[in-house]
Length: 200
Image 1 (cartoon, helix red, strand yellow):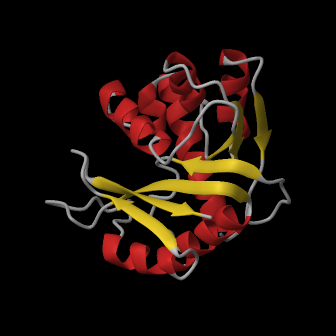
Image 2: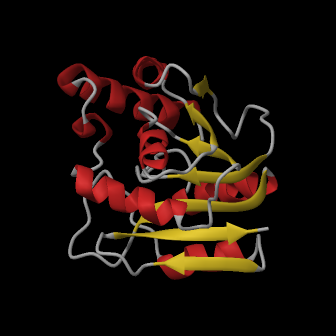
Image 3: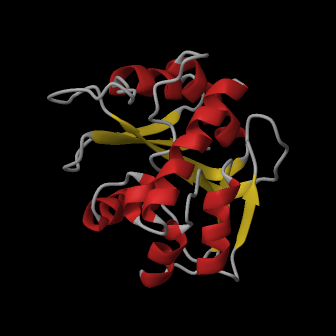
């Protein structure tokens, strides 16, 4: 991602953080019920006790709270490009490891599972969204031991918002199949989005 789009994303969330603080509205994740469903679908890739999990675009790190509440004993790490969101995450979960990191630019180690929710839905200005998500899937797949789960906004909607990018599930599935032979597309839950699983 070019610096212009990266800064747009950072500014977008910082403006919301100023307005709402530590609140789901800052992350534009809808209701808590909808977010919990997303977390359930992400964990459905096969996360089990004892594994390491990297949350890319972790925001406030609330996936950690969901995993903890649902008795997943995992080694959780959160990466985000926004230092202000990470400051909130560190206050909320002081025992958890969070880093300001751009996985396209920075080196990082392998994890058992790499997941990401609602992090790649902004319509980019400096690069094609499909090119971008293709690179993200490839980087995550290279750095996972078991699997990758990423949710995206679907093109199967009644209307599209101007700022959001709605991905064709078929196109993303085809791109994922060029990266891994083992791919699963989840478009069976009642949100206007889908989740792609890539396995090693």
